[in-house]
Length: 466
Image (cartoon, rainbow, N blue to C red):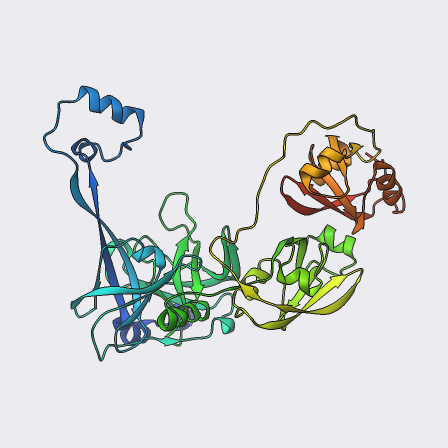
């Protein structure tokens, strides 16, 4: 009897565990035929010496050394072809294919290979570098096409499958789970990425990410890696974001995005306390473009935008994506938090141009005048008329040496304090009076001018003063 029980434990239970694992075979059989291999070539020219030493840039001093002392090579610059590989998937039976913009960028020739080994030359209908989405077309009919799913219904921990051509190996299948949703990556403000632990490698770019119902929920776009290979951090563009881009490219050949003319920053727990918010959420406006849509709507520096066009702003990363997805010319309602109360304002969204950039700058390097010691860990001085004119501001106090509480808060020498909890600061004396109104341990929000940017700094009034 004991022996039979041991056999049950060793054989039956493992089999029961295996039966609970997902079966991907049907998904791959039905959807794999819609996934394609994309190869591109780009013509270029390099000198014969550059071809001998391909890893040495032509502006490198060693390249000049080789040019002088290596035997002369016959002929001038020679043409060569740079090749790259990627993936894509068919979205219509008549040959429209979605992929990443970086897969087809600057390509002179694009070749699409299907699973039945047929090859077609493709043309680019359009691409958008901000979201890394491209739409290409081959001349064919009756092709298998994918079905789109709803990324909003994805749950963290849910199984997902990637099919693509890593390192050129066609129709490679890898699986994993959704690790996180709504990820923001540096310089990627318009995409709330789906993070997975699906094995994605060079060549997977542009391939589809499927849910277990066989629906495409994303385009595999980026990996986080210290080696260039897979390390368990893969990022996919949600298919609803990608499809909106593809439809615009197909109908008009270009992308239009909205803008309202604000510079924002995250709302930290300290800033939320300072502004009287129950928890950190929304996008904190630290400057407003003069004459822009936000200023015309009455939005001010220090406002926290909580909702835009009915959509909640859970974090500052949400606002650029939601505003960017709003059609220019639309009149929408924004909910803002000001003076510990919410209010609604109407904003007319304008179009974002390619050269619209948030200004970034460093310090002006000006020599501060004689400073007054402060109990808050900063030496402060009133601005001179010349400094106000150079900085194009009406008032504020200049920060000199920084230590103690100010250093811990992140204040820097050369900062200009413009306001305390949205009350304008004109002199050092007034600054000290405003700060003296708050209890020790209280967090206040200092509006600071740093270079050409403005930002809010949460400042805790330490019991020791400095």
